[in-house]
Amino acid sequence: MGSGASLMWGMLFGSVGLGFFVYGKKQQRMIPLVAGIGLMVFPYFVTDPILIVVIGIALMALPYFYRE
Image 1 (tube, rainbow, N blue to C red):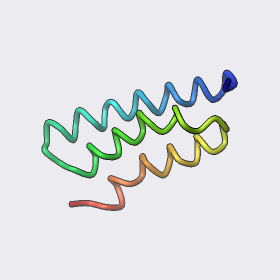
Image 2 (image 1 turned 30 degrees about the vertical axis):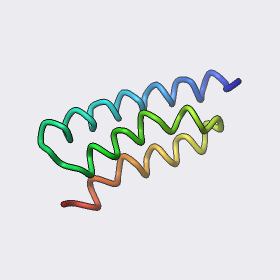
Image 3 (image 1 turned 135 degrees about the vertical axis):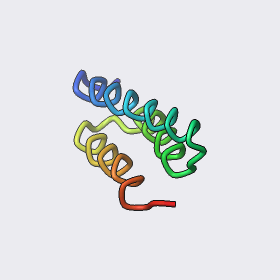
């Protein structure tokens, strides 16, 4: 069972991931779509809050640094 911090971080990154997913689907862009799916799914598998923050920031930066 995860802590409250991991729950809150997972919820935050999941919400941002939903935004990336909707944007990627509407604009037909693959990188934001995949980053959004990743942001919504990875908190289910990672329980350490620090690791959640690191992975979440990396996935959020992915569409900025890797453009189609």
